[in-house]
Length: 201
Image 1 (cartoon, rainbow, N blue to C red):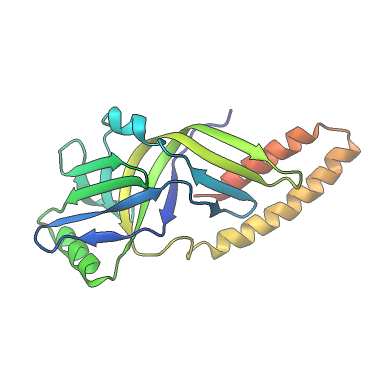
Image 2: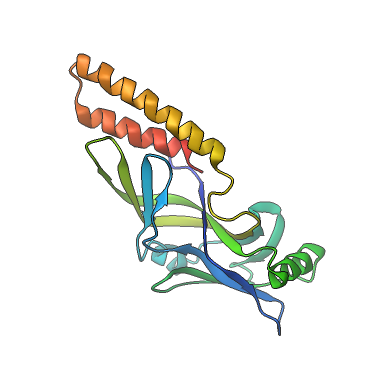
């Protein structure tokens, strides 16, 4: 089993600022939405955050995942997480700080309107296609932060997309080599999956 590591995903969800209070709210993650990470397609299963919320994990609300830009925290009661049929919802009581006021204003103006979250997968289901591509379904995870973010989903991943294409070509060559050496094709598939994870964030 590979070593657990922190990952980030950005979704095309909406974060809103409440006009009558210094709060923001939105969805940090959405269930059953396919994310194309090259030759790995990923979805988050309903209930993936149930345990993390029940365990009252210490989750921060950050701006752009920057630990220097803390907006709220579950431990202090300034960040509230919940799970519904749509996904992972959050409400953050914004601090009366420069970054807090700035982020609230940017969200009110519509300059910032996307959300993301940081996590470590603790349970997943992976299925493979004959061409080596795979579907990863995240079923349970530990949460670290939810963040309003500047850039929309995958707009900043053009370099990753090119890297994924190069990795796919490498994989195809590896499969040819594996066939020549009579290796188990399942091993090649698993290598594909691990390669895809190493290129995702």
